[in-house]
Image 1 (tube, rainbow, N blue to C red):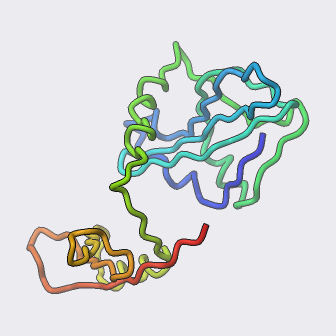
Image 2 (image 1 turned 90 degrees about the vertical axis):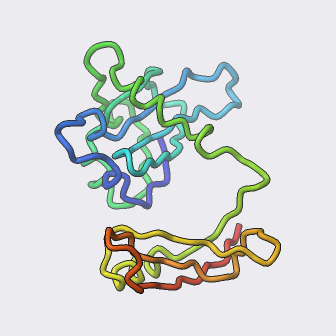
Image 3 (image 1 turned 120 degrees about the vertical axis):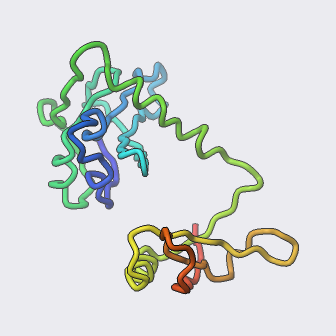
Length: 188
């Protein structure tokens, strides 16, 4: 199994004992493709209901996972320290814990349908930003919650060359605090 994990997937799960289904990273393993040329790809997902992250994972010929949905302790990802993981030998697979009952995770995770939530549309636009710069600006505002406004050009189209306007969300209304964060060029 291989995946490139340079993020902290374990930070995206819920820490609430009242929502145990969201305290795990979920691995979805689809049935193995019939064609030997087709890539066998599943995905890891994590959510705490405020954010959801999906990372593809590719299985190789030495992996023998069973199709289904599995809960994985998030510490497996915390201990990976951002190094791409490649498991080649049988018996060295991630310790998958099959959910008790009849796949109790599936109903909760079927609600996170990335294809429906993030469809490819012509009206979509992308703005790149440096997370460190954005985080510093948010910390400078002294707020944990912010609103980010994207600027439109004169024709009403999104303008990815103008700064993003960041304001704190507070109960007292606008108190004058504001941060501007310049977008970054997206290189593909």
